[in-house]
Length: 361
Image (cartoon, rainbow, N blue to C red):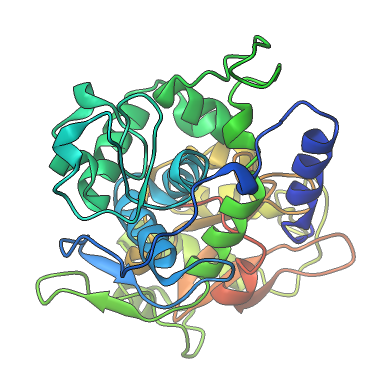
């Protein structure tokens, strides 16, 4: 199924905002205070560099949130976390005079909402002021609550955020939510910005890894390796190598809607048939393959892993296209009607946003 730009998501969200269902905007959020990014303690591997439309402090916080969430819940968790922090604090670590314990901790701005502090505007029951104002710890506190929400990864991201944050945007119009009838509408308003940030972070920027950390991102160049032994040398399991080798052997066969081989395939049919060849059963369509296996991250990709993207008709929360990582920064997929099964680069494949990475076996 053909890939399209995240502009579609932005357009839909903008239309909802204009219609009056969402009244909050970036203009109503805290603005950066002078000073550098804070929080020396970071996740194991975090990208570095500026991000469009953000100050240096905001960019550093966005990248920290992304790396922390990615390691625990994949890109889906990172998307929800970024969306939430954008809505709550505009990606700034905020102190609050209503919580005196936050006054001696380095901050990037001041907020006044109850006694909420930090990137996620967490109140005292979430933890100490030091915990809530530390970018990594506060993100992990948020993730603890997110992962505890049953089915969070299959929800609309803004609904998952609302389940965690319990903001005033309950779906019932009131004065405090500016008359919004949208459940999680304050988070939905940030969906386009969060999507753009997720794409910018995951498609560029060097890794800054600790010595005991990960070995770095999946290689972004190298030849296509199609034999089982060679794929295993790239890190694949026996089953993953068989699945990837089979998928690569289908190159040149036409895209066929609903196709499961042997003469043609659609995107998810190719994935299911390839893994069936390895003796592993996965679901049939990309929206459910999104939940097959376990979440993984770009730096841990091995041949056979699934890479899910919105495609022409999906969203980050409900992907409509899928490919298989085959090592050396390459993905094999069945693109769209009129095309054939082919290999493309991972960076090109996810250039319009990535819903998630799934390790099958």
